[in-house]
Structures are given as structure tokens and as C-alpha cells.
Image (cartoon, rainbow, N blue to C red; front, top):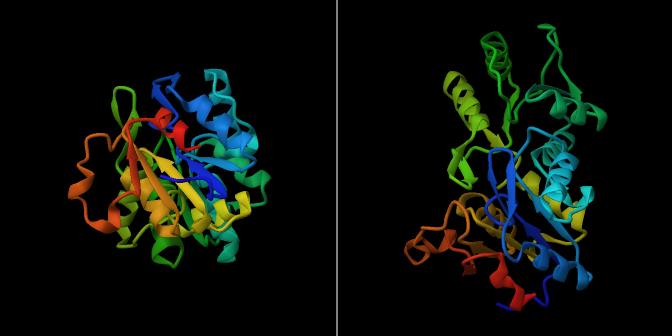
Amino acid sequence: MRLDDVRGFVLDVDGTLVHRAGDDVHVLPGAKEALSRIRASGRPLALFTNGSHIPPEGFAAGLREAGLGVSDAELLTPLSSVQTYLRSRQCSTLLLFGTADARGYLVANGIRVADGNERDDVDAVFVAHTDVVDFEELERAARAILGGARLLTGSFVPAYAGANGPIFSRGAMLTAALAKATGARPVVVGKPSRAALRTIEQHLGAGTQELAVIGDDLDLDVALGRLGGSRTILVRSGISGGVQVEQLPARRRPDAVVDGIADLLEWL
């Protein structure tokens, strides 16, 4: 595949550039070289992960500790794109299911996050990653959704790639519970979503039809690229490694398939 006319790149993290096993992060072969070649070409890149338990700069710091040189500014997550969504819909107050770090990040970026006051008017309920579920807060969220608040989630896929197999998404589990209780259809603001695409365009300064999206997940990365009209490349080093691409309907197929990120080096 020719990539010389691509104006920017969007890369997934887990299963594409690294494998994660608990607290251990292992950089995959070719990941460092691929990022270096993109930067050397003068084209911008963004790493978009659907992880939302820490701010984007926290992910960047973890990757640097693992040996993958990335800057804070190159990382995007649903904590980035939810801001795009909220501002485009003029939502003023958010009820958050997430970590203290996620809350602090959103507040620091001007998002009003509701506290425990039942009288707070809530425009949206946002489910990020959380390790604890409080049923009173869950019921409060359900009442807010029934009252007209939007149900937002960073991701609604059941799992993502880990070194030892799928890692289940707690955010998807919690979102499913709220959807079941209220009948609301969750709005994804991470991958794949319009909010993510708008955030990427703003970040890279290029339209999505001028980009290449590279990742290991058909339902996240390839779907994001196809939604924006980007070129899509599936790497088999992650969760979709065993999928028979030729058996998929045309609307779900990537433009190219490689075994790992190292196979892209000859195209960059």
C-alpha cells in the first residue's frame, strides 16, 4: 500500500504498538522504528487508546517508561474526545463514572463534573473506566438518563487485547447496566465515533480522508477509519489476529492487513 500521500497517522496502542500484561508493558517489534519514520517524514501522528483510567499524559509517561518514545501531546483518549462531544452539544454538567485522575483531568480542562448533590442538573452521564460501582450512584445516573441526560461511554466493546488474552472492559459492563435499566442507547465518544474523528482532525490539522488509521481491532480501529473515510490497516498482533478478513462484509474490511507494525516499515 502507498502511504506517501497520507497527511497524518492515527495508531492504536495496545495490541498494535505494545502488549500489556498487568503492570508490564512490552514494546512490539518495529513500533519504535515506525514512529520514528513517520516523524522523520514531517507528518503528524496521534496515538488513540480507549483507555480512560488516567489522563492522556499518564499513558504517554507509561509508554516512555516501557521504552517507546512518545510525547504527551501525541496521546488521545476518550477523556479528550468526550470534551469535544460535550462542547459541541453545549452540555454543562457531567455525571462521571471514572477514577479520581480522570475527574481531575476533566475539571482542569473546564468540564463541570457533578458532585454527590442529588439536586445537580445533569446533562450527560459519562462512563469511563472505574474500579468501583456504587449502586446509589448508578440509580442516580439512571434517573438522570430517564430525565433526558445523554448516556456516553468511552467504549462499548467487551474487551481489548492483552498479552495473555482479552482484557474485559469494566466500562462496557457498567454502560450495559445503565442501558438495560433505562432503555437508552449509549453514545460512544471514544473509538469509533464522530467525536473521536473531530478530535483527531483538530489535533492533526488534517481531514480524516487524508489520514491512515492503524490498529489491531476491527470494531475499534478499522471501524474508526472507515467512519472517517481514512485508509485502514489491520495489524494481526492483537485482538483481531485470528479473523478471516476475506469472509467479512466489504464495509468492515480494512484496506490492508499486516502481521505486525514492523511490516509497515517498507511502506513508510
